[in-house]
Image (cartoon, rainbow, N blue to C red; front, side, top):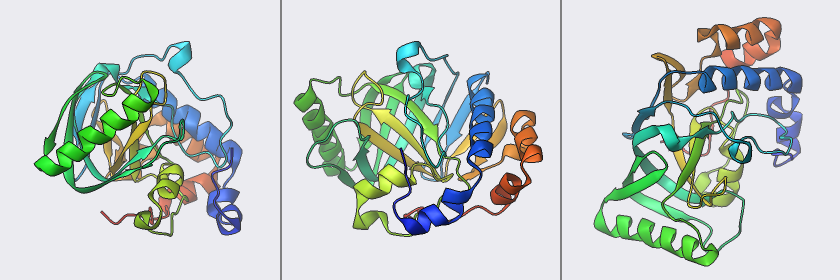
Length: 253
């Protein structure tokens, strides 16, 4: 499955970066995250959750499609995590099922509180919380889903993924492409079957792996871990890309 939206993206660094090198980097990132004893995630908007990874079962593991360009790490099951995620910009679909309206604009931040794979509640401006709750109820009722289930989360890592447009112009197009950007971590929620039906898009995450930031303020630092560092050593082109990553992700903050 190709995520390049046009010829420019395909011809640029996003499409031309060594695919095999990116496959090796993904394997290395997955090894670092899945083997971690403790992970903590924060973001500038107030997201703060932590916990331990749980090895995915067969039916909750990786997707079986081949992604190109490759720029997303293996989903981390949320069962072992608790805390809060601050929702901004948009709630978007996962691409699994189609529904209308396809997204919900978040005008003021809403905080989602959770324990393991259960959303325990939303807080924020009453009208915005009501809109979020109504959106969840609508999507869940349409398909007979467990509205407040969280399946997993993962972060983008493609260093040359650039979304030059604005998310506001087409939130669906944005969320279905920019999720591979280093500056975006997203959750899969609403429904017990992966990947769920509603995404939370978290901007500029810091992901601490046993106290060391693999992502820091939306920038991946593979040089900080031996496993990912070996991939940089093996592919100088990849190391150069991570040293000077693309910036635009469709949203400034």
